[in-house]
Amino acid sequence: MNTTDLETIPLNRPHLSASELAYLAEAVRGGSTSGDGPFTRRAAALLREMTGACHVLLTTSCTHALEMSAILLDLRPGDEVIMPSFTFMSTANAYALRGAVPMFVDCRPDTLNLDEKLVEAAITERTRAIVVVHYAGVACAMEALCAIAGRHGLALIEDNAHGLGGSYRGRPLGSFGGMAAQSFHVTKNVQCGEGGALLLNDTGLIADAEIIREKGTDRSRFFRGQVDKYRWVGIGSSYLPSDVLAAQLTSQLESFDGIQLRRHAVWRRYHEGLADWAARHGVSRPTVPDGCAHPAHLYYLLLPDLRNRQGLIAHLAARGVQAAFHYQPLHSAPAGTRYGRVAEGGCPVTEQVADRLVRLPLYADLSEAGLTRVINAVRTYEMS
Ligand SMILES: Cc1ncc(COP(=O)(O)O)c(C=O)c1O
Image 1 (cartoon, rainbow, N blue to C red):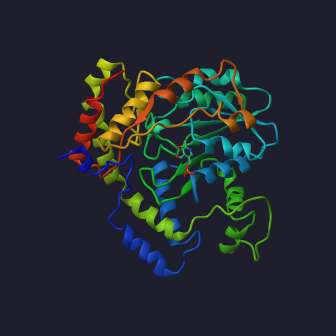
Image 2: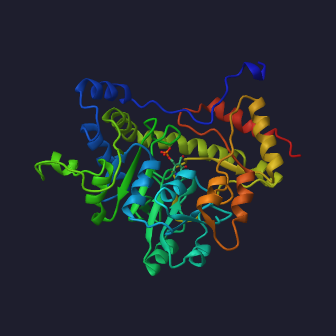
Image 3: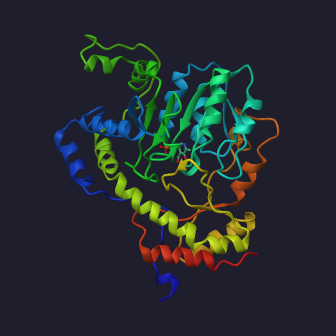
């Protein structure tokens, strides 16, 4: 068969879980399709169980959960928030929207996570918070980072967009920061198209978080019968997802173990199937430090340079395999230079890995034949 006859293997394809369509129909037929309906409560309870979070508020996206965290921090213009440059723009946008300055710190060359050794030097008298991103769901060095935040009285927030199901020394990701943000975007292990959650581990934040999520009103208290009318009591926005999306998410969360089993099998096949090829060609594979259990969110390779990274993506595309690069450095992005600052020493590791990284297709329904095709296609790439 000609390669042009082969169906393209996409980077990602959402899994349809067993009860998904039934739950969607139930939500629509039930009529309570606005926010905080029965499926929202079920999904939040499942997330509490999985992460150990004290309280879970479903949101319309991880971006919005991060925005809620920024409002909860009560940031003043000019306050600084430490974060990696190697992340999605939402991590920075959320705090820049409040007038705060993202302070970009470099990442570690092994896990691509915020380099904990560089964090303390980036703290100033204006620093209010540290935001960590568990890249690919592999934990940041949480012991060191929690100690730094504690020593300097800083809030710690986990952008856990990739990390549902991951853990650090046996403790679930999302349970370390006072707040953590989850994503249920279609590209995530469990998804509802667009969706997210704010996990609260600091119980003192729950009442304000409910107000922020309900357009700055005490409507949640009103629905619980705790006040006789609801009023505008603070700033906020409309961060509640429809219960229809929560129905889809509930079904996906109930299928989590099955989805994860398959994703881990794909991840391991890449890791084993490409080990010798990577070693021969100076290509790095993901590093998972001791004590970290990752949720098989991404499989990536670090090619020797940009030319070969682009070469491999084109080589795979010609063989019907969709591969992609990932984050571009935020500290040197147009908005990054306008709204943020970069820590002393810059972000040389971020610049390098952004040029060298390529992600391979990874989804629960990737067939054995498809996996073999991807591995063989990578292995036939000749370095230039
Ligand atoms: C680290 C990180 N944070 C936040 C987001 C934004 O997630 P969402 O699309 O749910 O807003 C993403 C998106 O993939 C991400 O990778």
